Image (cartoon, rainbow, N blue to C red; front, top):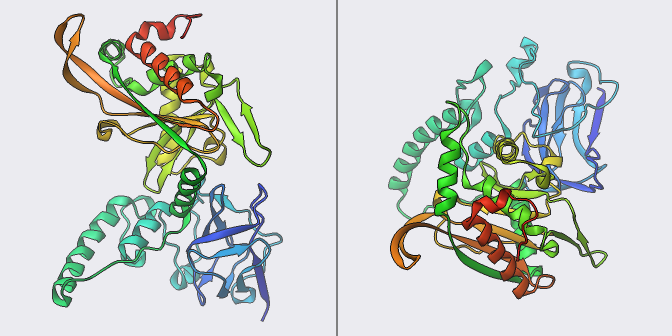
Length: 407
């Protein structure tokens, strides 16, 4: 018997270990070369690791949530079970570029260990819901399991679980191990809140004129074109304001004790995805017009939501904007996206009676909720920046006028 020991690959960027997120094979299964065998998570990205050879799995190292050092044995194959080893291990793939699951698998191997075709996000949903993917019939191309299939399966599972719970009585609990992207989010949020003294500042903004401009712009669009939201307009205003407040467009390099001030504005857009919060980046926002800004925000957020964003699209922001849209509430306390020093939160816009030019009138009002790193941004400067942003939002024509003196 010939054995092939596959070790945890070096995934680059100085990675010394990776966390096991999900195994897609098990001891005794027969796999084909380039079939995804395990999903791992580094501090930089989620990665699908394909089999470097065809063969039978003899053993695996680590359970979901465990960390395996680079260079340590990950999985052992019996290579003469089906085929000879490949000349070189296949390259790992980031989850943002899923493997081509349409390749044909030899019938003998498919009968032993068929590859269940679905996305990493759906695998996570299935794990959390206690659904065995082998029992789910996929309705997608080539039998791929899509989210709707999981919802249908979950409905059936819920009925079974409800019956079981009723029979067993109250007190049932479900334990969900915190692994993968959710673990990484938890660690980074905790680190940011623990290490950064947050200074919160909330200001009420009259967006009546901004709403009028938005509606006018949307009325000029061709049928089927994506409409403008507040976000690109407010990001453009933010870019203008940062010209006068460069101390807020900064990254703090804690290892060197240095503030790195950027001329370019790379705006992170906090985006809720099925896998958790991600922050795709609109690069060089200061060079974009309104249409370009809106298109780029749509592009990067959609890639994040569909798990197609590359690592380069998820790192490198210099300031972050977060919006809960219709769930925006009255105010929020956003956590700074370290190593940045500022984050701007958009809350829900609502119509309210306000005193406007000496008379009560219905105005559209939205709060800006911001947080600043108080070590490096003084409270006065933080307040002045938000007031300057408020002025541009309330008088949106100023966003598009060059050389406006922002207070």
